[in-house]
Image 1 (cartoon, rainbow, N blue to C red):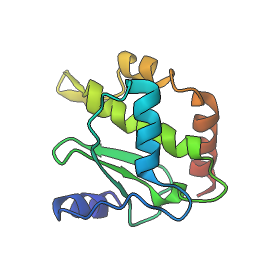
Image 2: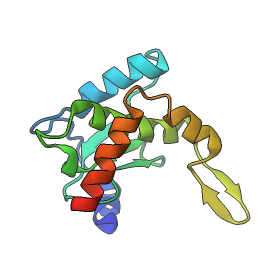
Image 3: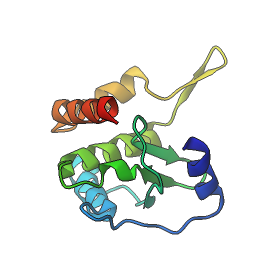
Amino acid sequence: QEILAELDLLGGMAERTEGVHHNLADSFERVNQSYFQGSMIRPHLTWSQTFTSRQFGHYDRTHDTIMVSMSLDRKDVPGYVTDFVVYHELLHKVIGSRWSRSRNFSHTPEFTSQEKQFRHYQESKAILHKLARTS
């Protein structure tokens, strides 16, 4: 699934923000206004073409693209969960990653601290954890 996602990105895939139940452009606008004071330039947004059970989002810095798993485009997944994944990926865009001992770390203490500022952090993490266990 990760390889398919990378091939999509390399192929210059078309942006697909409109899902069946959720819209990534709307999620971006809510998150941008609430957490970045409207200052973020919108990256390319797209739903993955495959269902995933553990990785629900990905930020590609090279293509400035956020890909969200279509596994979240369900009626029983609250919109704030999609917003959380978009927020999480935007934090990767803003904070970046750090190299230490020949390893790349993206979930640094700064990242985790910022991530916890999301209004529905606990609820979102619980739903994503449940989805990962049941998929």
